[in-house]
Length: 136
Image 1: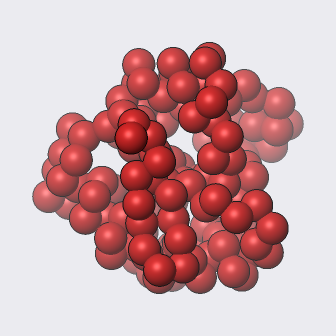
Image 2: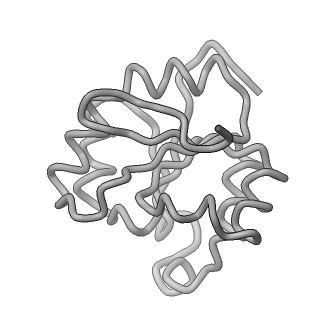
Image 3: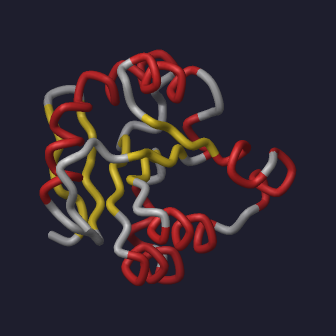
């Protein structure tokens, strides 16, 4: 549900526990990482369908780098059912600092979309902007 206040974010394990979350926290966002929410051991093996459902239930905006998720029926079903708002890096070869920089640079636009548009959706996060990936 859209809100006027900045959203809270859930960081998928693919983005790491420190560099990206720390950069987003330094930019003033509230960030939840998988290890903090589920514990390190459980978080590493947790199915995507479960954490996607939980993120949606908590109204957390998901940040991830697995843009292929939109092609997997079970994960897309969980994202859709939970109304997840997701933003995804589409370049899997970026290092931690580059990923953090890209999310922080695009954070104003990500916040604007997340606040004004209810999910479900997946947006791609690029060096030059944020564009819809799913649904088209």
